[in-house]
Length: 344
Image (spheres, helix red, strand yellow):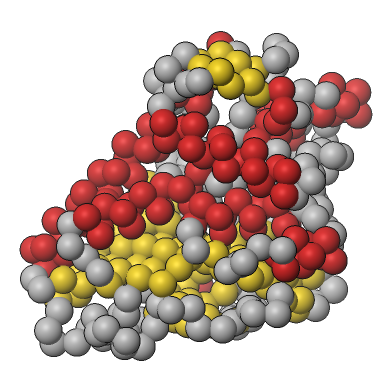
């Protein structure tokens, strides 16, 4: 599952031709799962599909290849089902309907779950993560990262997660023009649900890599207490090296960085946007987060990317079972106290 630079370029080219890079649950900085051989007792099967606007790779180990493939088929089907809820661009999706009409009755439980965690993350990050940033992102896309200052101020006035109201399973946006994006967290939730499907179908050793959002369990050898999965963090400078390699037997890791998708030719405006300013942060090049679930890792990586490094590390220190690595613009590697310890 390790990819060469030419493979990565081909992947991006394919996604751009299909119109997937700039929309949906957009392409994230990639993490690599380094290969290993399975023990003879279990059969390893791997499959890659184009989903969620990125490449989703799964590896599952089971007593037979048929069982592994069947489990992965159910997991891929679950990804498709959930993508149809969280898309901002599919008119039939629940999230798109909320944005289009400003309200949504009978919201699906999956959407409510992610909204609940998004609100928690907004409080934890003191607003650095805000799911109502969508109007600003749309403005940056339309203006190629160079919005009129008055238009930017008007878009920022629509950013306030507290103005997304919920009454039981009914949702309402307080102001015309408000919109929600869950691109920075929904992909992680979907990866978690895919992992649930693998477990439900009897797979105890697996790895899911949803475009850099990774969930693993067990061992690539299929052995209880065997060698952990090894996950390599991508170099944001594309220098061909790995800033860190993690050993992970159970848990998740996600990376967020503003070096894949840009709105402007000068590469100063990217898909990570500070809800307070409407601008892309420049202090940190990439943030990787270890957490129990991919939704937690995905959302936090997004939030920490727009926070000053000192505040980001302080937040992680308050969250048990969470660790992070920050690669700053000046070349520093800043990590939390438990970063890199093997997770079992």
